[in-house]
Length: 469
Image (tube, rainbow, N blue to C red):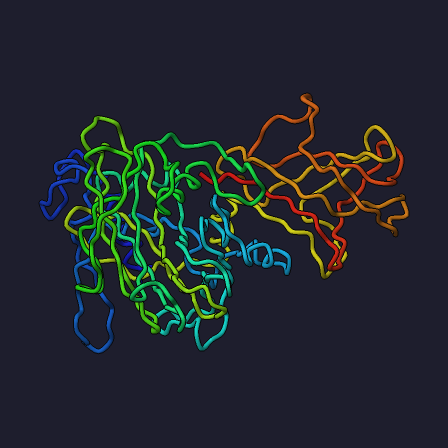
């Protein structure tokens, strides 16, 4: 039913373009006589309800015809790729950390905790993770590590310039479901919501340390956590409205721009899943200047005060959505649900994370290798599963295996993984990377080989390609 009216609406718009120079047969003027659609216009839609049930016709805003509304990726954790959580050691890498610089957790989501200990996990327990309105199976848990230090913890996502463009001069509506653990120790059970903007240039992929956030993402994280190092002309956008109505408090925010208005929203969380929303206009220019706004970022933060050994000092998040709306629109749409296949493509456009399999001796997907200058040296080519946003920065942790002979029955450990330094064969690309490695023994020069997973708990290899903004 929904597809039918969407198709009809799309055809109507196409027809409007085709007859831009004239009138429709019902004497309505062509769209060109009005100008670009603002998203607030309405069109009648047949509901196709059976047996005359009402309403038979409803009005919907043209903004729904603009394609994907939700500009966040991986905000519905039941369909997120969760690349870093795919292995036991990947999960362990997000346990008991105190990141003073933002690290990547679930796909596209950075976490920072300059003073606190934090553990990020995926909750798949039906009794706590499931939100009846979503029928989801997973939620993301951000917890103060048991016995860890108190302090602010933030989880956020930063958009690149292209993804940020629809928000410029519009309302940004950030909505999500939140759940407080029974021992969540922030004062009053409070958490805060940041909707930020900047004029910083769209960064190339950066990954100073393996697994860390991108250049602008790292800076937004610092700003949201109240630390020095925020991006150029960083401003917390002024909160215009919150949902549920009357549930939040608008408090002073942060900015590196003198005199720029800035606020954030504070909510008292609950041990029952609740949907919250914050509406914040994103200006065209940085306040008081003619410098254009270029980027948008959002985050949710809480500040545990306990330091005792409890396991319930956490928040859980699910169904996170960020949509652009015309000025005056302050109500979030229902969560836009995407398939797991689409989420895979979107997530890996920004970030590729592969941790050596500890359960199965198997080839690493998308990698082919060849012995090069000696029987201890090889070069491999990795084809990324998805062409990435830009040429990524690639980092390695030593590990993996290569076959030691053309019988392909015995493997030996590899080490010294690095982006291949031969300028004749390593033209920077967003579709793959060549890398060199050393092994104890490999077959003769020119012999094809395979990069293999060790398949035991001793596996250590990691390959991460980041095009995170």
